[in-house]
Image 1 (cartoon, rainbow, N blue to C red):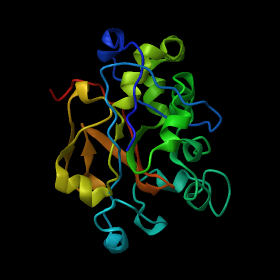
Image 2: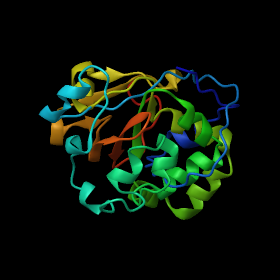
Image 3: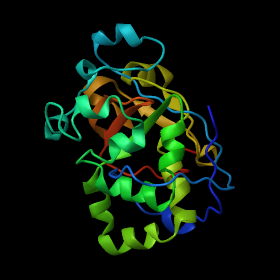
Image 4: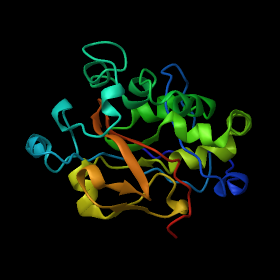
Length: 225
């Protein structure tokens, strides 16, 4: 697993904010700089029994996807559908996901697209668009213009190992690429699982190099320290 690093992290202004992230663009360049956020790999976990084939490695299939917002994804082979996202690396896949347009904009603003795409096996907690809506367009634009402050927040949503939902439930807590932010706490299981208190809107989404969990909040580094 390669480590993700970002230059200058002034999270002070953002740490107090309850952000929610979304993703949505596959054409950004990868960025990494120096900062106190080492980069472990991330992975996602699946709650369904069909995960037997991926047991132990966090890899999921379309049959393992769960959550109330999954029905909002395009169907068939349309861009943003499960069939379309599966073969793509995570940042590229997210760029077509209609639930994650703001997260993708944030990833592009911090030049982390290529970095995420190049990871071998990670887990991504992806805040949906409504999470950013609570922040407001003006504040989001301000953060997007300050990549050194935004990057550590995004890193806190990526785990340097691939987990499915069952794996996350077993782990109980996981470290993220932003190790300075402290571990992310996993509670409950399946449909009732929460990530640092955030509900899962659509979980166990498979991509080429990551398992993705769309969540209803932006995770704040340092919350569980």
